[in-house]
Amino acid sequence: MRWEPDRTPPALPYAPPPFLTAIRRGAMNRCPICGQGKVFDGYLKVVAECSVCHAPLGRLRADDAPPYFTILLVGHLLVPGIFLVERAYMPPMWLHMAIWLPLFTLASMAVLRPVKGAVVGWMLSLGFTGDEHGPDPIPAPLAAAVVRPDH
Image 1 (spheres, helix red, strand yellow):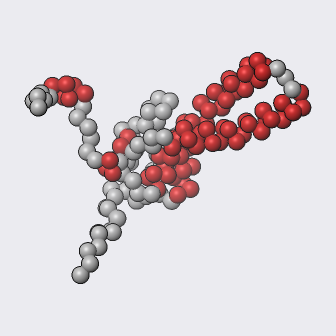
Image 2 (image 1 turned 90 degrees about the vertical axis):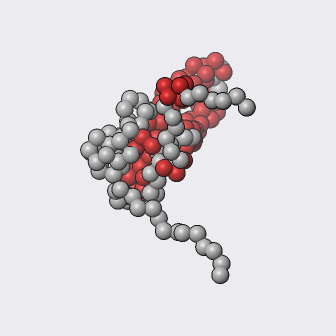
Image 3 (image 1 turned 90 degrees about the horizontal axis):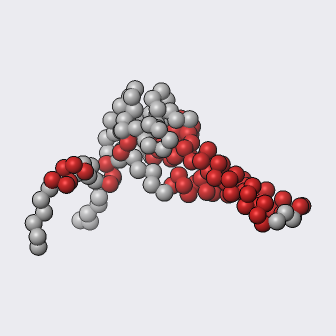
């Protein structure tokens, strides 16, 4: 007899929302589950849990996906403009830098938050709970108090 792993999905405390609904709600800073609570507490800090439905949003780790998608989107939107301006007007390099660097910075800052919210929604629609990366780490004040024996 051959061993097969248990492939039943884990029981979730909430029903995962449809894919596009979760992404749209997350991008609009709304809880992907209920659509009413907020995703962010500040610019990019994800709330620990939804204030309405108590979905565990803070345990989800979007990591490098939001910056990656932000660079992809902003780059594809602005780089063609750089080429068109260069071909049509041939401005000096200092003028390119004076115009395009601030424009890239502002566009990236404007796009990053909705993209991160959409990634959190995407993760919830896939059934992620935040428990995939193990238990919560020891809080900093307790970690400092832990005495480690010398080896």
